[in-house]
Length: 355
Image (cartoon, rainbow, N blue to C red; front, side, top):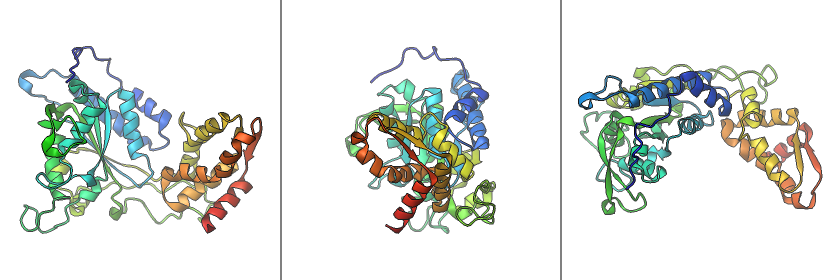
């Protein structure tokens, strides 16, 4: 088991503006969410550096809850934050976990996965970030059994109760080998008080997005307008949705993400260093082919994403389908420059829609 002897040799704290600037390079739009995450991360770093006389800290944990539609950048923001802070990062799907004692993953396994990402370095893992996705899927289903009476909700309320100790900060026994069955592990003690937990979910039933404004094909305004903004989710709405009050109390920082507009999706394809258009240009460049995509073509792709209501998540799928024949012929077209215009993209999208 590794331990890091240079506990005190930590880098100077990044300011919220510096964290926001880093996020802004890779994440398009969502300015309010990026500012909120930057502030929460900065406060978390200050908490980690705060002296702990008698093991007590005045600053409480800044765990986050991100609410937003699919493809709006929830996971991307969390992953980029971990890169900025240079800490280990793991993604846990809340639907994989069950209440302790039932077949399925115990919640301690997500801490074990973080330890694995940290290459078994306990001190480094204790400063990492755990992203819990699909948190809305573990809402309490037995609405009348708030105290555990009646049928056991082993994949919903039970998981929320199991997560309480992790979110608050407690020493837990995390498995060193997360691939084995739970009762065959070698365990190591991990203190979760300095682990930042970021929970995220779509919460589609809350209808946080104003649906009165039409988007996509046939929308008034030519389809180039901005997407509707998300409203705030109230505490009562989240409680009625099925999240426990104790669970929400351990996720004090909450932010709603907006659906990406056509302009946002256009920037997603072109602006970040790891943009999808740059990826396919690099792929074809390895075969000696220069790929150019006109702005009109990329606008059509963005409109198609809005029409499908999948956000940025489907951008790569659409570009992959458009470039399918080009990539097949690329080795025989070395030295050529291929330009994809709006007419070509419209034809491909229409063909895929009817296929």
